[in-house]
Length: 261
Image (tube, rainbow, N blue to C red; front, top):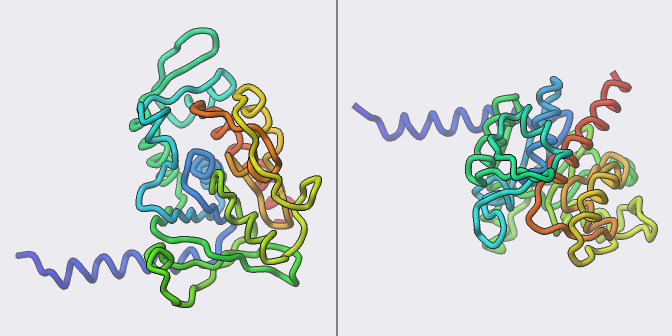
């Protein structure tokens, strides 16, 4: 016999147990695309407490669509070791190009990230940041995505993190909070979001990895948010830079967390 109320109670109990355990973590990742998930994978694998918040119902970001909704992903040679570690199946296309089934790649990355211990929350959106003394990000302000979509005036809740990663893609939402709410200047030549340039895949892929890093005390950027914040070129439907950027952000944060232990 199935009890409807028992089913409901299991959902409530398990969800809020998990959410409550993530009100204070080592790293909060905003955006569950390839860069955010990769960063969360390496951080969780390193033994750190990680929570990922995704405003959409599905996770994986642009991975599912490949290029123009042809669900094939392309990666370059530099990212192959990450594909091998995570276990994403791929085909060698020659000349340093590798292709992967987009659905299988996204599902594998999500499963490995969750399996490593990262807690992933979909349909939860960051609508602001917590600041310490006005000069360091110390956490996130969260609300249900449905509240935002419905334009309801419902107060949010807060969670704490030693570091936050903005992996929200072209929108660079968390960096935008810092800029637009006068929290402080970003670590860019202008002190502000510089805006993404047109497509140049070769330069864009290099740029997004080179400029992954701390853009404000306590706030890292990874993936397409890097191009948007620092004024880099977009790279179109090649995904290796996203994985490499996520890993770089994780490694740098782990170094800092180890230094503070």
